[in-house]
Length: 328
Ligand code: 2P0
Image (cartoon, rainbow, N blue to C red; front, side, top):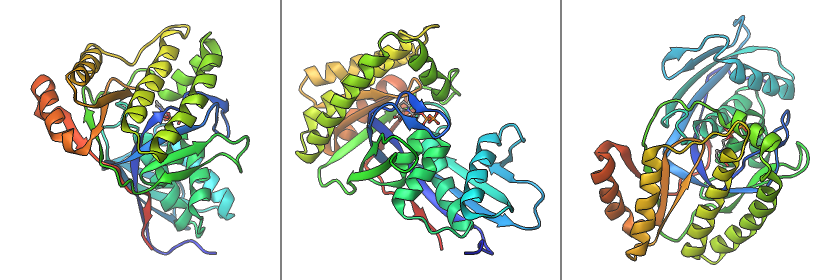
C-alpha cells in the first residue's frame, strides 16, 4: 500500500465518560486500570487533515491556524512515528487540525483530537484499518480517544495488552431521547493534565484499589442501564462514578481538585432540580466544566435554567454523536 497523493481528512467527536478511565496499568501502551464507558457527543469535534510527503524534512503541525513548535507538537509527532512504523514508511507529514472543542477545559479535546489523527494519518499512510484497529491506534495517542472512534454509547474494554485493549459500540444510535447540557464554566487550560493527575492517583491515593473495584461494578451496572434504557440508573451511576473519580484527586498526595466554585454551585443546582422532579444528573471530567445528563425533551428548559445562572454563552446542548468519518 502507498501513501496518498492528497490530504486525508477525518472528523471525530469527543466523548464524555459515564464510567471514567482514571489510571494506567501500562503507560507506554496506555492500558487502563478499568473498563470505561462513554457517550459520543455531536456538538464537539475535531477535524484533521494529514498528508505524508517525501519532500518534507520534518513533520509540520498546524493547530487551529497556528504552527506548533517542536515542543508543542511532540505528542503528535510521537503518534505519527507509530503510524509510520505500522505502515513501514519514513516520510514526514503535514497535519492540519481544527478543534471545535474548548481545548483542555475538561471537554476532552484529546479524545476527538487523537481519534481524528488516527483516522486521517493511518489512511494517509496507506493503511486501511477497521474500526477496532483504529480504536487501538487512537489509544496510543490518548486513552479517551480509544472511545471516540464509535458513536453513541461506547465501551473501552481494558484488555491486557495492545491487541486486547480497544473500544466497541454498545448502542451506536440510541433510540431513547438523551441529551447532555454542557456548562462551559471556564475554557482555560487546566493546571494538572489528566495524564499527570491520574498517575498521581495510581501512585499515591490510598483509595485507588477501591476505585478499581467500584468502577468495574459501575461498568456492569451502566451496561445494564443502557441495555434496558433505564435513565435513572444511568444517571445515578454516572454521578456516583464521577464523584468516585474526583475523590481520587482529593485523596492524592499532593492533593488537588478539578472543582471550582462554579462547579460546586452547578452540581448543587442539578441536585435541586432533581428534587423538584426534573430527572437530571451531573458528571465532571478533568476540568471544572459540569455536564448534565437529561432527557432530550427537558434539555431546553434545563439549559435556560443554567443560562440564567452562568450566562447565555456558557451553556451548550448536545446529543449523542456519530463515530469517526474519514475522507477517501
Ligand atoms: C475519561 N478522562 O474516561 C476520563 C475521565 C478525564 C476524566 O480520559 O493520558 O486525556 O492521554 O490517556 O485520555 C482524560 O484522559 O489521558 C480522560 P491520556 P486522557 O474520559
